[in-house]
Length: 316
Image 1 (tube, helix red, strand yellow):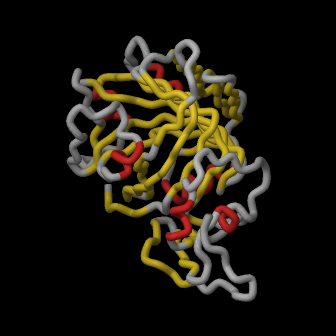
Image 2: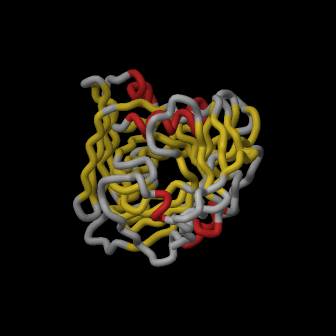
Protein backbone atom coordinates (compact mmCIF):
# COMPACT_ATOMS: atom_id res chain seq x y z
CA UNK A 1 0.00 0.00 0.00
CA UNK A 2 3.00 2.33 0.04
CA UNK A 3 6.25 3.08 1.83
CA UNK A 4 6.24 3.72 5.55
CA UNK A 5 8.84 5.74 7.43
CA UNK A 6 11.48 4.16 9.60
CA UNK A 7 10.31 4.99 13.13
CA UNK A 8 13.86 5.94 14.15
CA UNK A 9 13.97 8.72 11.57
CA UNK A 10 12.27 12.07 11.84
CA UNK A 11 10.92 13.13 8.44
CA UNK A 12 12.76 16.05 6.91
CA UNK A 13 10.75 18.51 4.90
CA UNK A 14 11.36 21.48 2.65
CA UNK A 15 9.10 23.94 0.90
CA UNK A 16 8.10 23.17 -2.67
CA UNK A 17 7.02 25.46 -5.50
CA UNK A 18 3.32 24.70 -5.43
CA UNK A 19 2.02 27.43 -3.12
CA UNK A 20 -1.51 28.80 -3.46
CA UNK A 21 -3.00 32.29 -3.00
CA UNK A 22 -4.17 33.31 0.44
CA UNK A 23 -1.02 32.40 2.36
CA UNK A 24 -1.15 28.66 1.64
CA UNK A 25 2.29 27.12 1.27
CA UNK A 26 3.52 23.59 0.76
CA UNK A 27 6.08 21.37 2.48
CA UNK A 28 7.56 18.25 0.94
CA UNK A 29 8.38 15.37 3.30
CA UNK A 30 11.59 13.82 1.98
CA UNK A 31 11.83 10.67 4.09
CA UNK A 32 8.20 9.60 4.15
CA UNK A 33 6.11 8.55 1.17
CA UNK A 34 2.31 8.46 1.24
CA UNK A 35 0.41 5.37 2.29
CA UNK A 36 -3.09 4.80 3.62
CA UNK A 37 -1.55 4.42 7.07
CA UNK A 38 0.22 7.80 6.98
CA UNK A 39 -2.61 9.70 5.29
CA UNK A 40 -5.32 8.42 7.65
CA UNK A 41 -3.24 8.09 10.83
CA UNK A 42 -5.04 10.92 12.64
CA UNK A 43 -8.52 10.22 11.30
CA UNK A 44 -11.23 8.57 13.36
CA UNK A 45 -14.57 7.03 12.49
CA UNK A 46 -15.48 4.30 10.05
CA UNK A 47 -13.34 1.59 8.53
CA UNK A 48 -11.67 1.11 5.18
CA UNK A 49 -13.84 -0.35 2.40
CA UNK A 50 -11.43 -0.79 -0.52
CA UNK A 51 -13.23 -1.76 -3.73
CA UNK A 52 -10.30 -2.94 -5.86
CA UNK A 53 -7.00 -4.32 -4.67
CA UNK A 54 -4.23 -2.08 -5.94
CA UNK A 55 -6.31 1.07 -6.45
CA UNK A 56 -4.36 2.98 -3.80
CA UNK A 57 -0.95 1.56 -4.75
CA UNK A 58 0.04 4.57 -6.95
CA UNK A 59 0.11 6.92 -3.95
CA UNK A 60 3.27 5.23 -2.67
CA UNK A 61 5.22 6.38 -5.72
CA UNK A 62 4.38 10.06 -5.20
CA UNK A 63 5.78 12.65 -2.77
CA UNK A 64 3.98 13.40 0.47
CA UNK A 65 3.09 17.11 0.51
CA UNK A 66 1.45 19.15 3.23
CA UNK A 67 -0.53 22.31 2.48
CA UNK A 68 -0.29 24.73 5.43
CA UNK A 69 -1.55 28.15 6.48
CA UNK A 70 -1.80 30.13 9.70
CA UNK A 71 -4.51 29.50 12.33
CA UNK A 72 -5.25 25.96 11.09
CA UNK A 73 -5.91 23.80 14.16
CA UNK A 74 -7.16 20.60 12.55
CA UNK A 75 -4.99 17.64 11.44
CA UNK A 76 -2.53 18.44 8.61
CA UNK A 77 -3.77 18.63 5.02
CA UNK A 78 -1.63 15.90 3.48
CA UNK A 79 -1.73 15.19 -0.26
CA UNK A 80 -2.59 13.03 -1.96
CA UNK A 81 -5.86 13.06 -0.01
CA UNK A 82 -7.77 9.79 0.03
CA UNK A 83 -11.20 8.45 0.88
CA UNK A 84 -11.55 4.73 1.51
CA UNK A 85 -15.27 4.56 2.30
CA UNK A 86 -17.98 6.90 0.99
CA UNK A 87 -21.16 6.97 -1.07
CA UNK A 88 -22.41 9.25 -3.84
CA UNK A 89 -25.73 10.21 -5.41
CA UNK A 90 -25.81 12.39 -8.53
CA UNK A 91 -28.07 13.41 -11.37
CA UNK A 92 -27.48 15.60 -14.42
CA UNK A 93 -29.89 17.62 -16.51
CA UNK A 94 -29.54 19.67 -19.67
CA UNK A 95 -30.17 23.42 -19.57
CA UNK A 96 -29.75 26.36 -21.98
CA UNK A 97 -26.08 26.97 -22.71
CA UNK A 98 -26.42 30.64 -21.76
CA UNK A 99 -27.76 29.71 -18.31
CA UNK A 100 -24.82 27.39 -17.72
CA UNK A 101 -22.44 30.11 -18.87
CA UNK A 102 -23.95 32.53 -16.35
CA UNK A 103 -23.13 30.11 -13.52
CA UNK A 104 -19.39 30.17 -14.36
CA UNK A 105 -16.87 32.96 -13.72
CA UNK A 106 -16.87 35.76 -16.26
CA UNK A 107 -13.73 34.83 -18.18
CA UNK A 108 -12.90 33.65 -21.68
CA UNK A 109 -10.80 30.82 -20.24
CA UNK A 110 -13.83 28.72 -19.23
CA UNK A 111 -16.94 27.76 -21.18
CA UNK A 112 -19.59 25.10 -20.58
CA UNK A 113 -19.50 21.88 -22.57
CA UNK A 114 -21.98 22.25 -25.43
CA UNK A 115 -24.16 19.26 -26.28
CA UNK A 116 -25.18 18.38 -29.83
CA UNK A 117 -28.53 20.14 -29.32
CA UNK A 118 -26.78 23.36 -28.28
CA UNK A 119 -27.61 22.99 -24.59
CA UNK A 120 -25.23 22.45 -21.66
CA UNK A 121 -25.20 20.23 -18.57
CA UNK A 122 -25.53 20.81 -14.84
CA UNK A 123 -24.85 18.09 -12.24
CA UNK A 124 -26.33 17.90 -8.73
CA UNK A 125 -24.42 15.63 -6.38
CA UNK A 126 -24.30 14.52 -2.76
CA UNK A 127 -21.58 12.54 -0.96
CA UNK A 128 -21.37 10.84 2.41
CA UNK A 129 -17.72 10.42 3.54
CA UNK A 130 -17.29 7.91 6.35
CA UNK A 131 -13.50 7.41 6.15
CA UNK A 132 -11.18 9.91 4.48
CA UNK A 133 -8.53 12.59 4.78
CA UNK A 134 -10.96 15.28 5.98
CA UNK A 135 -12.80 13.10 8.46
CA UNK A 136 -16.44 11.97 8.33
CA UNK A 137 -18.65 14.55 6.62
CA UNK A 138 -21.31 15.07 3.96
CA UNK A 139 -21.39 17.34 0.92
CA UNK A 140 -24.11 18.62 -1.39
CA UNK A 141 -23.09 20.46 -4.54
CA UNK A 142 -23.84 21.72 -8.03
CA UNK A 143 -21.27 21.56 -10.84
CA UNK A 144 -21.06 22.42 -14.54
CA UNK A 145 -18.92 20.35 -16.97
CA UNK A 146 -16.64 22.94 -18.56
CA UNK A 147 -13.74 23.33 -20.97
CA UNK A 148 -10.58 25.24 -20.05
CA UNK A 149 -8.55 27.38 -22.48
CA UNK A 150 -10.32 26.37 -25.66
CA UNK A 151 -10.09 22.62 -25.08
CA UNK A 152 -12.27 20.51 -27.35
CA UNK A 153 -14.06 17.37 -26.19
CA UNK A 154 -13.45 14.17 -28.12
CA UNK A 155 -15.89 13.36 -30.97
CA UNK A 156 -18.94 11.39 -29.82
CA UNK A 157 -17.76 11.81 -26.23
CA UNK A 158 -19.83 10.38 -23.38
CA UNK A 159 -21.81 12.86 -21.32
CA UNK A 160 -18.91 13.19 -18.92
CA UNK A 161 -15.43 12.10 -19.82
CA UNK A 162 -15.09 9.90 -16.77
CA UNK A 163 -12.26 7.54 -16.06
CA UNK A 164 -8.98 7.34 -17.90
CA UNK A 165 -10.13 9.56 -20.77
CA UNK A 166 -11.09 12.37 -18.39
CA UNK A 167 -7.88 12.35 -16.36
CA UNK A 168 -5.84 12.49 -19.57
CA UNK A 169 -7.68 15.59 -20.82
CA UNK A 170 -6.82 18.38 -18.37
CA UNK A 171 -8.96 20.85 -20.32
CA UNK A 172 -12.17 18.94 -19.51
CA UNK A 173 -13.28 19.80 -15.97
CA UNK A 174 -16.13 19.85 -13.49
CA UNK A 175 -16.58 23.37 -12.11
CA UNK A 176 -18.50 23.49 -8.77
CA UNK A 177 -20.74 26.54 -8.59
CA UNK A 178 -22.12 25.78 -5.12
CA UNK A 179 -21.05 23.36 -2.37
CA UNK A 180 -22.42 22.91 1.15
CA UNK A 181 -20.99 20.61 3.83
CA UNK A 182 -21.95 19.60 7.37
CA UNK A 183 -18.50 19.89 8.96
CA UNK A 184 -16.42 23.02 9.63
CA UNK A 185 -13.07 21.37 8.87
CA UNK A 186 -14.11 20.36 5.35
CA UNK A 187 -15.60 23.80 4.78
CA UNK A 188 -12.47 25.76 5.73
CA UNK A 189 -10.16 23.39 3.84
CA UNK A 190 -12.33 23.64 0.73
CA UNK A 191 -12.25 27.42 0.80
CA UNK A 192 -8.52 27.79 1.51
CA UNK A 193 -7.30 25.07 -0.86
CA UNK A 194 -9.75 25.41 -3.74
CA UNK A 195 -11.77 28.60 -3.23
CA UNK A 196 -14.95 26.52 -3.25
CA UNK A 197 -18.16 28.40 -2.40
CA UNK A 198 -18.69 26.35 0.73
CA UNK A 199 -21.18 26.77 3.55
CA UNK A 200 -21.73 24.66 6.68
CA UNK A 201 -25.24 23.26 7.01
CA UNK A 202 -27.20 20.21 8.11
CA UNK A 203 -27.00 17.33 5.64
CA UNK A 204 -29.16 14.25 5.26
CA UNK A 205 -28.03 11.24 3.25
CA UNK A 206 -29.37 7.72 2.80
CA UNK A 207 -28.86 4.93 0.28
CA UNK A 208 -31.00 1.81 0.04
CA UNK A 209 -29.89 -0.58 -2.66
CA UNK A 210 -29.56 1.45 -5.87
CA UNK A 211 -31.68 4.40 -4.79
CA UNK A 212 -31.12 7.21 -2.37
CA UNK A 213 -32.04 10.63 -1.04
CA UNK A 214 -29.94 13.57 0.11
CA UNK A 215 -30.75 17.01 1.52
CA UNK A 216 -29.00 20.12 2.78
CA UNK A 217 -30.28 22.93 5.04
CA UNK A 218 -28.77 26.00 6.69
CA UNK A 219 -30.10 27.88 9.73
CA UNK A 220 -33.37 25.93 9.52
CA UNK A 221 -33.88 26.95 5.89
CA UNK A 222 -34.06 24.22 3.26
CA UNK A 223 -31.48 24.54 0.52
CA UNK A 224 -31.96 21.52 -1.75
CA UNK A 225 -33.08 17.89 -1.90
CA UNK A 226 -32.05 15.21 -4.39
CA UNK A 227 -33.67 11.80 -4.94
CA UNK A 228 -32.13 9.26 -7.33
CA UNK A 229 -33.02 5.70 -8.32
CA UNK A 230 -31.77 3.17 -10.86
CA UNK A 231 -34.23 1.52 -13.26
CA UNK A 232 -35.62 -1.85 -12.26
CA UNK A 233 -33.38 -4.48 -10.72
CA UNK A 234 -29.87 -3.40 -11.69
CA UNK A 235 -26.64 -5.13 -10.73
CA UNK A 236 -24.02 -2.93 -9.12
CA UNK A 237 -20.89 -2.58 -11.25
CA UNK A 238 -17.46 -1.09 -10.62
CA UNK A 239 -16.82 2.01 -12.73
CA UNK A 240 -13.94 4.40 -13.19
CA UNK A 241 -15.21 7.91 -12.37
CA UNK A 242 -12.00 9.97 -12.44
CA UNK A 243 -12.22 13.66 -13.32
CA UNK A 244 -10.49 17.04 -13.20
CA UNK A 245 -11.94 19.64 -10.85
CA UNK A 246 -11.62 23.35 -11.57
CA UNK A 247 -12.33 26.20 -9.17
CA UNK A 248 -11.42 29.83 -8.51
CA UNK A 249 -9.26 31.00 -5.60
CA UNK A 250 -8.66 34.75 -5.17
CA UNK A 251 -8.77 35.44 -8.89
CA UNK A 252 -6.70 32.38 -9.83
CA UNK A 253 -7.89 29.13 -11.39
CA UNK A 254 -7.13 25.98 -9.38
CA UNK A 255 -7.14 22.54 -11.00
CA UNK A 256 -7.27 19.24 -9.13
CA UNK A 257 -7.12 15.69 -10.49
CA UNK A 258 -9.25 13.05 -8.81
CA UNK A 259 -8.87 9.35 -9.48
CA UNK A 260 -12.09 7.66 -8.42
CA UNK A 261 -13.84 4.31 -8.63
CA UNK A 262 -17.31 3.38 -7.49
CA UNK A 263 -19.47 0.29 -7.20
CA UNK A 264 -23.05 1.01 -8.18
CA UNK A 265 -25.06 2.31 -11.13
CA UNK A 266 -24.37 5.00 -13.74
CA UNK A 267 -26.66 5.40 -16.73
CA UNK A 268 -29.31 7.30 -18.67
CA UNK A 269 -32.32 5.18 -17.69
CA UNK A 270 -32.63 6.11 -14.04
CA UNK A 271 -35.01 8.52 -12.33
CA UNK A 272 -34.15 11.62 -10.33
CA UNK A 273 -35.81 14.64 -8.78
CA UNK A 274 -34.21 17.87 -7.58
CA UNK A 275 -36.02 20.37 -5.36
CA UNK A 276 -34.76 23.74 -4.12
CA UNK A 277 -35.73 25.47 -0.90
CA UNK A 278 -36.01 29.16 -0.09
CA UNK A 279 -32.41 29.68 1.00
CA UNK A 280 -30.91 32.46 -1.18
CA UNK A 281 -27.82 30.40 -2.03
CA UNK A 282 -30.02 27.80 -3.73
CA UNK A 283 -33.33 29.52 -4.50
CA UNK A 284 -31.69 31.10 -7.58
CA UNK A 285 -31.45 27.65 -9.17
CA UNK A 286 -35.25 27.45 -9.41
CA UNK A 287 -34.91 29.72 -12.45
CA UNK A 288 -32.89 27.15 -14.40
CA UNK A 289 -34.72 25.69 -17.39
CA UNK A 290 -33.86 22.07 -16.71
CA UNK A 291 -34.77 19.34 -19.18
CA UNK A 292 -37.90 17.25 -18.50
CA UNK A 293 -35.90 14.24 -17.33
CA UNK A 294 -32.34 13.63 -16.17
CA UNK A 295 -29.67 12.94 -18.76
CA UNK A 296 -27.85 10.64 -16.38
CA UNK A 297 -28.11 9.34 -12.81
CA UNK A 298 -25.50 7.89 -10.46
CA UNK A 299 -26.00 5.79 -7.34
CA UNK A 300 -22.76 4.47 -5.83
CA UNK A 301 -23.06 3.06 -2.29
CA UNK A 302 -19.33 2.20 -2.31
CA UNK A 303 -16.63 4.59 -3.52
CA UNK A 304 -12.87 5.18 -3.20
CA UNK A 305 -10.83 8.11 -4.42
CA UNK A 306 -7.42 9.75 -4.56
CA UNK A 307 -7.25 13.56 -4.81
CA UNK A 308 -3.91 14.95 -5.95
CA UNK A 309 -2.73 18.35 -4.72
CA UNK A 310 -4.36 21.51 -6.10
CA UNK A 311 -2.38 23.39 -8.75
CA UNK A 312 -2.56 27.07 -9.71
CA UNK A 313 -3.15 27.26 -13.48
CA UNK A 314 -3.09 31.02 -13.82
CA UNK A 315 -5.31 34.10 -13.50
CA UNK A 316 -8.99 34.01 -14.32
